[in-house]
Image (cartoon, rainbow, N blue to C red; front, top):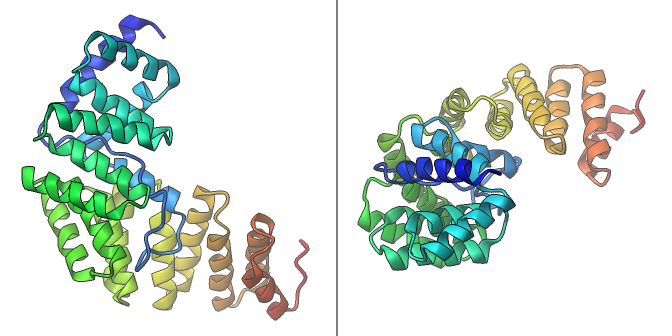
Length: 306
């Protein structure tokens, strides 16, 4: 990497960091919170956090530009020359988080807070990592501090809503997501999480509505298709659910549950051959998934491809 190219991009990212409301979106959701979180592929949700708002698009630029080893080394060189460079710590913290080096990321965001205690985005980013590493109390403290400093920080509302969701405080979680939507109407993850809560509460029409919006804002993310398919199954919309599960399965090659539920939808549609193919596909991905094996037995067919 040419050093001049790196510093040109460093200047660009500094400008992004200084825009009002900008937060580096981390690919969170590595752990499944309890309560109303669905069984969908959580990894697919990560892309929702970096969706259509302008600052989220800019965060994609950040990840492509600064998360590699060479760039981490270059950020380290910046910090050796300027040990109090807030922006460099902020960027390196996000890069460490992208690589799964969470303690280093926490240390860098903590340094940002030490340098600028009223910088709300650093609390949000550190809170996201605390949540990812199951330090829920610390995550809540950081989200609360971020909101005290910046009541319009929509990412803090989304993060706090996930904790409320985990605690089964669904009314509080929905209130936070409503606030996030009011602040950034084109942020798909807020609709997605609200849809999951409504699904958990049995409000499937409302859940489908929220998931429709999430999909319209981020059509290439498979998680919302899977969850919309689940609600459509409950509503008896089997053909639509069948299509949703296919999109979800294609988005993540290891999503055996999407293939399983595609088989269930095919059964409801009276097509046992398509159902058997879907169940076999689920078993090919996860041979230990007994529900698919039982479904094939119920259909009177073997687990081997026809």
